[in-house]
Every structure is written in structure tokens, then in C-alpha cells.
Length: 133
Image (cartoon, rainbow, N blue to C red; front, top):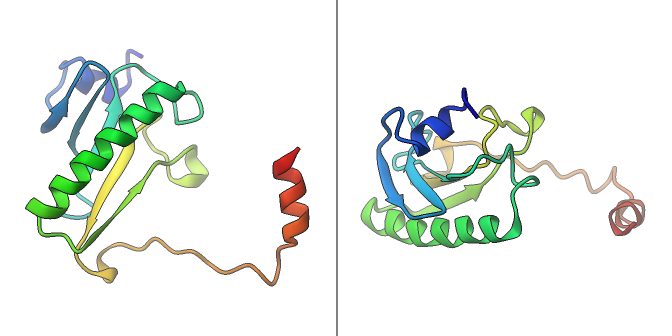
């Protein structure tokens, strides 16, 4: 895609702090650095999100994310990490090129990822039936 910033980084049209590259993907430091060492893993081929990417690409990116996570945890002395991908604006996706965030964690307060308990409002049987269709 001509105006995709991640495609431009993958094609070396604009610079990025690339920390890993192979034939399928590359990983680079996120400019925002939500946490120290925040890294993005992207496919070189453009997919808007994880749902558009083929299974082989998704699997490869997660294997790379796992390897990089171990290195980041060790070398940046993180106490934990989050690995996530966002799909669509409501989920926080701002760049429409599939990418995986590696977010090293040093303490609980530096980044908020909140899961609210809605168990008293959710009919699990209904959800189960919808998903299993």
C-alpha cells in the first residue's frame, strides 16, 4: 500500500530502528515506546489486520515475537511483558497493517490494560452458542 507507514518501513523507504528481519517479517522499535523496549513485529506483505493474514504468516510472526520477547525480557531486564495485536479502531488499531506489539513490563502502573469483570451481566450459554455457530 502506497501510504502505509509500515509498508514504507518494510520497503526501507523510511528509516526504522529494525532489530530483526527475515524474508517474511521485520521487527522494529515503536516510536511511541509505551514501555521501554516496545517493539513491533510486522509482515513485509501488507495485511490490514490479523484476520486478513494467512495462517503461515501469523504463525511465523508469533514465533518471531516469542524469540524477541525472550531477548527483550533478558536484555532490558523486564519483569514481564504483554504480546498483543489490535484489530480495528474500537480495539485501538491506528495503523492498518497487521502488527504484533511486544510490550515489556517493569511495573504494573506504567501501562494500563484493563479487563473488567462482566460475568454478572453475561449469559455464557448465549455467548457459547453464538461462537459455536
